[in-house]
Image 1 (tube, rainbow, N blue to C red):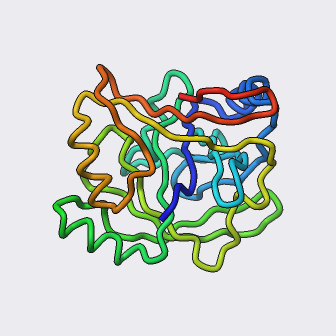
Image 2 (cartoon, rainbow, N blue to C red):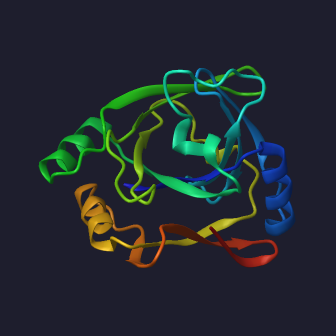
Length: 208
């Protein structure tokens, strides 16, 4: 298990990419569209097998009518880290283990997106039926035969560490233990916040 990627939600993709380029010194590359979800993204590598996903509503897609957009990004007022993904070798086995420890990460589901050059990337992930930790508890992901996106995304940045604050920190920690990961430190805080320390061409920077 390892941190697969961080999810940075934004009201508008282009503006978020421009702002991050100014702050980090690296410009994220277009990732593609998520058909049916109403979103599109851009990617920035944070290491060999870790990346930053900038995701926003796609103005060229109709928003879903039967559910909200992933991670509630259609309700964001300003960009922020909204959650993160934990890469596992066997999603179903990780789900079964977590459920035995009284945390339900959700059933594995297939997902895909189309890249700007017309390729289709496919993966399997989970989405918890009940929100725990306000996005601080990761979802699970496995890329199967798809090459990991970090390897083709623009480089120059590295994830140093990930931390979080939450007013119910022990509950978040229990969920992390159920997922068999302690890749993130959680401390008590007045409001939920996810904070990534990045090494960038412009020096170290905290992204929230």
